[in-house]
Length: 286
Image 1: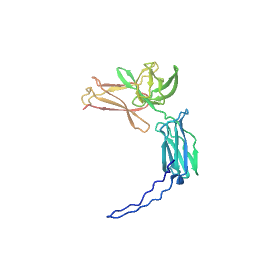
Image 2: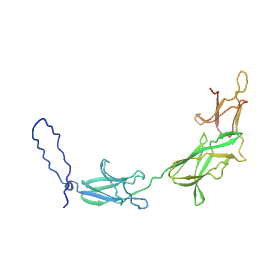
Image 3: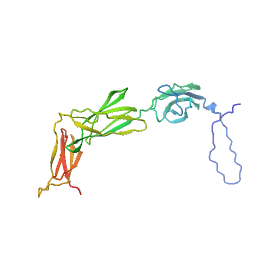
Image 4: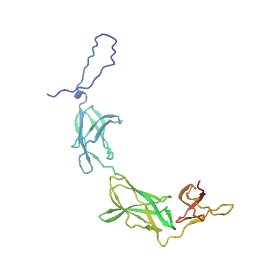
């Protein structure tokens, strides 16, 4: 025989001050007499596979929480003891995008909701590094160089995007699928020295570092900034002075893009300087 279920009730605060008999009676109402409505349904992924342990939330139309339930191994949920009224039902799981909520109106009995279809969140993977060249026996960081990223599918390179290196020579690109990717320089002045820069993206690693060495192509114009640092009074060359190169943007803000120490003859040399406005600062090591 099925046992009746009743709605929880409670008394007002009871104060006991000494020997006495306190009588507190309760008149309980059956749950089904007050909350006669129930809902059920399934939660599935984009290919129709049922999802277990997904939270199905019930809210008022003002998004005040009412109750929630987890889906079973079959992907099914069943929520009962709901008073008649209007509700918002929403299924949520941390690894999936939030689906469209369902607005329902309950007036008694049981209703089956449409399936919730959850779409797996796209995991982001970051490939980053610096682009540089070895020029005049000095490592130069290359700014404003275009880097192309292609996804390799069945041996074919499918271009995805092109990014440009920052003032400090750094590039960064985000991909959303595991697999093999090919990185190369696509620039009129440079090409990739290593022609086999393949990157394997796996789910266990979200950030992959890959520095790229560039080589000049024949038609690169010779754009350099160089000079000598000397003592103003004696005109003797200063060795080991720090020379910093700054790029000026449209608002005349300074962005440090390279630095080096003067050699034994007080000389410094910056190669691969692109069109733009620059400022040079010199300081001595303490």
